[in-house]
Image (tube, rainbow, N blue to C red; front, side, top):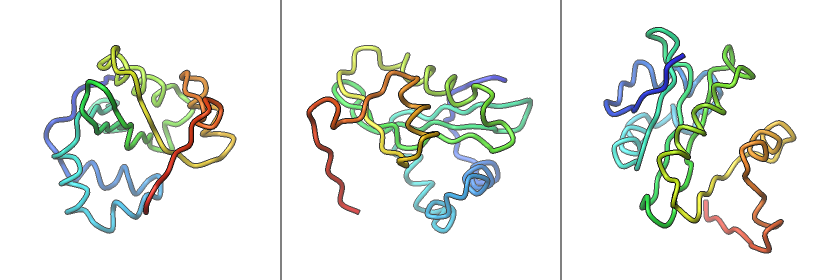
Length: 133
């Protein structure tokens, strides 16, 4: 597996990856997804040969705050360390950023994964998060 910067949006590999994890809010609006990629702070992709198997995408200013917007791994490659390697590669790009955020599903699997990377629930840090959706 190789991780590299993802700088040229290619719908032929992005949409199948998002579809593989059931993120239809993205695949239903590929034009919006493309704009999101174009305006992202950083995108990294994991490849097995020529096949994209995972992706992490960050937004923010890169100095004071970074939001991990998307981290996804094709189901056939999950539980093999791909997501961990993607997250680690992204975090290494922002070693001095004080706040790195993410929003995820509240399931034991996702909570365990992000806690293994050193993330904490905002309520455990005496904070509260708000979202308008």
